[in-house]
Image (tube, rainbow, N blue to C red):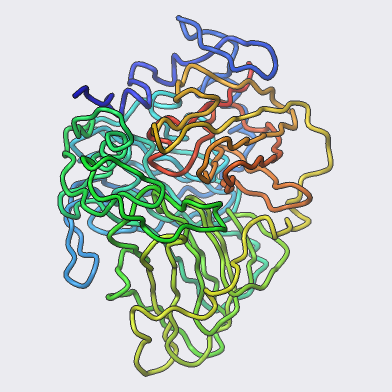
Length: 525
């Protein structure tokens, strides 16, 4: 049986470092390809255009943080302890807070057995700090450290995670909250809620072994190699999910749920054994304490690898104020749907009692939950589901951008069409029928209004994420950096090309991006 390619081959070798990865120009609408010397016509991640853009940003007080990525064992609750990789000895990793207009300086020490990186999800930051090995930086090798330093211009709810292999589906993630020094919202308390689907270390499984089994089960060869030497394809029983129709060799093919009409059918590829809120299982949940009548800002982050979550707070209505860090016209709802990588801020007025904040794995089995407690009394049973989950949850397309962040009307100067391709049968996810190659770039020019056309030719939904920018959904829709593209549908979004560099656009399903559903937008020099 032939071997799977090493994961770091998929993402580009260390030799394709930021200082040598540039490209020549091609006709509009066609991807460019980097020349052999890497000295073509694209902006370099550390080039003068990037430095000039960074110099124009405000550089206020510096927030300094030191972080260690390490192997550890984590208790998820109810007697579940797993070996994994994490930032320190906790998941999520320690929350970082910075102030808009300031500077963040974070030094990551890599105590892992594999190279790693940090990507700052949603931030419009300088390109050479974006954390993509083989494109914007050299990988951080085991035993080494690296300091990320950049201006933080925009307030909002963000998070960070590696862009190395499948490490994001371990415990390597944490929230990043950028506070607004002129915060317009009024609230008494703040609750950061990170959702995650979990399999790492359960019955010997790793994310890499899951991807190997998906590929092998779809008819590809594979030997279970992790690409980082850290595991094999054991522990796969029951983990292949709704979209997967694997051969018997890949393990049971029982569906992870009934699918999701909201997501166009199949909800995901993997049936996770655990779903977590702030690193805890539903039977041993985190409890957030407040007083009846408190106004609470809840910052919701979906850090999952393959699961959308339908979220509700039992006995409460939520008022959506932000998505992906940017304000929207306030909208009341009973429930929200979050794809992987999406964030929503909501306001709730706390009732009197004990209430479950429940995240239903959309179209799959399983839930995650935490508790809001404002009074003595027993918590609802772990299996209870708030009635607020039974209706149709709010999605981003029903929101409107706040006036202050709405893009000014303007015709696009350029349209970049990204055809999302691949199938469960071959597990060959890509863009334009190709797997990721960092040397291929879709050219844009600084100052342009760019329209991205995500054309989903596949039978699966994809949460598409653009690095270094936010885009606007159609018809006055919200500003976002991650948006769900349904199967067989086209989503057009607009952004202003105001942050020079080489920027990834990719599916935030970790197994789809890990198979090649990524591409690069490259600013022309």
